[in-house]
Image (cartoon, rainbow, N blue to C red; front, side, top):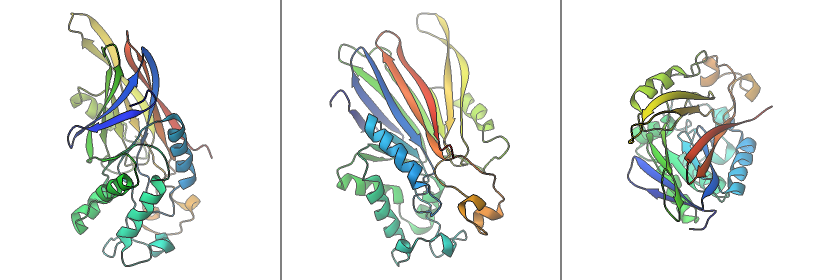
Length: 292
C-alpha cells in the first residue's frame, strides 16, 4: 500500500475499515454519496461524473449509502412509468441491463467503492430475489476495481496508519440509507436527535433516502481514561443524491409528481480528514452541491 493509497478491508457484514498509510501528518478525503438512481432518466450523470472524477483525482474512496439503482420499471412495480424507461433498458432482461450499465459507468472511474443497500434495492431483493448491489460489486471486481457490498446500515472505521505508531488514529462513520418520507419541513433533522441517543461510537453519521441535504454538528461531553473531561462533536450529514424531479426534470405526471415534491438539491458530501500524530484526526464535512 503506497502513501497515496487506501486499503479497504471488510471486517464483517456490518463493519468495513478504510486504512490510510501516512506520516506524522496527512490530509485525506472520503466522498459520501447516496441515491444515485443511475438508471433513471432524471439522474444527473453530469454532476455525478464531475464528483467521481474529483474523487479519482485526489484518491478518495467513495461510500454510497444505498439507492444506487432506481429499478422501478420491472413488470409488477406500481411506480413504473414507460416514459422513465431508457431505450437501452427496453429488453426482457431489464435488471441485467441496468446492472451491466452501472458496471460500465462506475467502472470507468479509478476509485474504490463501498456500496450500501437502499430501499430501491431491497424491494428488488424482496420481490425478485436478486441483490443488485452484490451483482454490481462482483462486476466491478471483475473489471479490476475495489468494490465492497454492504448492508442497509453499518459502520466504516477510518484509520490512519502512522509507521511509527498509531495513537489516536480512528474515526468511525455510521451509515443508514434512511427511513420515512421526504420531510420537506424538517429535512430529516429530527432523526439526528434520535440517532445521537443510541449511536455512542460514531464520529460522523451519514443518512440518505429523502433527497435532502444538511451537515450539522452535535457536541457531546466525554471523559478520558486519565480522568480529563473534554468536548467533541458528532457530525450528522444527509446526502441528497443525483436524481432531479418535478417539472424542472420534464415530468408532467407520474409517481413522483403526484406526491407534489418540493425541489431538492443534487450532490454529495466530501469529508476531509486531517491527521496529526499528536492530536489525532479532525473531520470536516464539505457539501458538494450543484449550483444551477
